[in-house]
Amino acid sequence: SKDVRPVILQLCSWKALRAEQIAAILGRGQTHVVRRYLAPMVRDGQLAYVYPNQPAHPQQAYRALADTVPHKPNRKKHG
Image 1 (cartoon, rainbow, N blue to C red):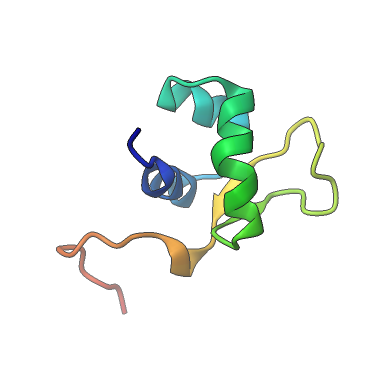
Image 2 (tube, rainbow, N blue to C red):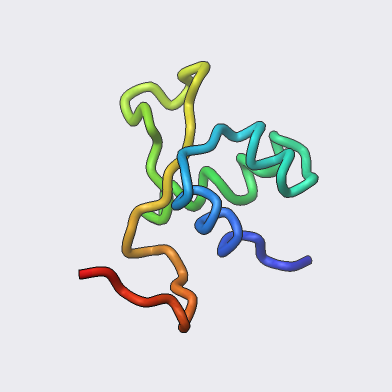
């Protein structure tokens, strides 16, 4: 099975997404996506909760932490 973590990081660097949105984009079950990818990625510091003090928040979403996003080689840096 292909590792979808780089895809998740790209998605969550675009905007904060809820688990069900990420699962729908990936075409996988939400519980599987949370257990297999999202929870470990939060633990590893790749993703952050939008509501960090309430992991079970009904509108909980995930955002990528800037320095963990895989960069496309042809993308120009701003500034």
